[in-house]
Image (cartoon, rainbow, N blue to C red; front, side):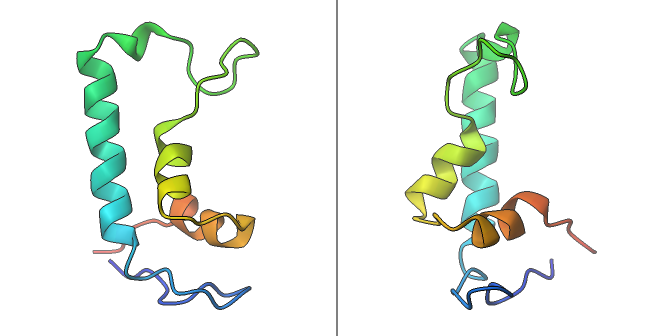
Length: 79
């Protein structure tokens, strides 16, 4: 797991938040499946207005800049 320590664009510290982000998103997605909300149209549907688990966790982490959010959303673990 090689996540950048700081955002390349703005320099905000993001490396310490990545593991918690992954765990929390997985927890919310599991809860969504258990609550039978998996039948709700996901993401790119015009009627889908509910906040995604990823957006909810990023807001909890107070990562509001799109450059920092990009790192969390698009990072691929290299093992």
